[in-house]
Amino acid sequence: MQFIMNKILVPIDFSGSSDWGFNYAYSLAQQFGADLYVTHIYRPPYIESTMPTAMIEQILSDKERELLKHLKACAQPPLAFPNENQLNRVTIHYILESGANSGIVDIAKNNDIDLIVMGTHGAGNAIEKVWGTNTSKVIKEASCPVLAVPIGAEFSNLGNIAYATDYDVNDIDNIMQLVLFATAIDAKVHCIHINNVLDPPSTDEEASFKEKFEARFKDLPVTFSARSSTSVEEGLDTFLRVNHVNILSMLTHKRSLWDRMFGEKSMTRGMAMRSKIPLLAFHS
Image 1: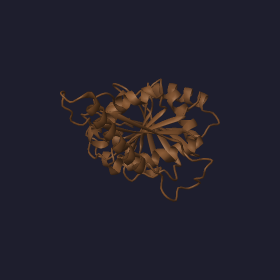
Image 2 (image 1 turned 90 degrees about the vertical axis):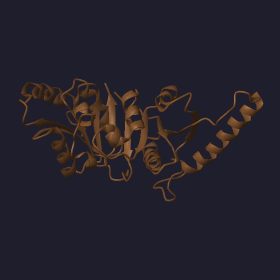
Image 3 (image 1 turned 60 degrees about the vertical axis):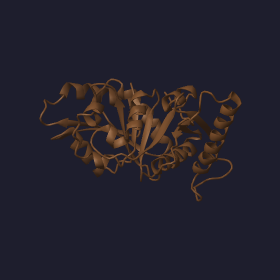
Image 4 (image 1 turned 180 degrees about the horizontal axis):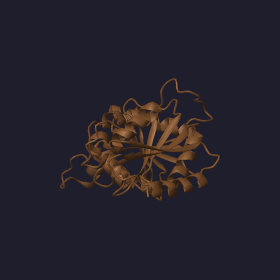
């Protein structure tokens, strides 16, 4: 199995959060030798149906030319980007799409994107507030992994990546992808399960998962641990803090740990802290 990283997509809306997302995505693209696809989805200009076709085409052409100029001016690496030279300079592709015709998920699918990186700015309890409505929609609908990067998250010193597991059968494959991802950036992976002390312990599930885990990840830079806490949210919050985790990764699907952590009914008190850590979402 291989974590393919040839194409990284990053949406730009000219906000501060998308700037952070671009710089993070650029760092990843340089690390993996991937191409970076920078996209902006714009609102079509107002056009009267009675306008001549040539006039309509000119209006649209002028709009896209103006936006492309701004997009190229926005999508530039820092002036003192480390290790930047002509040999490892990231190739950037620019995609402009009308919001009436396409969305981020469609763009990713049409261009065979391997990873979507989105800058976020939300803060609150439910995922829509934590990551922003648009980001949460992409996380739920995209077929490729999505990395949500909050303002302030820095790419340097990515030493620890955590994978939160609910003992789902698909987690083993996702953790393997994450190990390959982590190896490329010289990071370690920590697989963590949080038991709620108010619920019966899942002893059999843990034993079965641990057996598969140890068989699959022998001699690889990945650890497994199960902790107990008064709530899954607070237990994971503490684990992230204590172990200086730089990226949190999870599997997303119905009735999973994902829903308990980020669903609309979640009352997670530590979510404000976790919103400062990039989230890498996989799909089963």
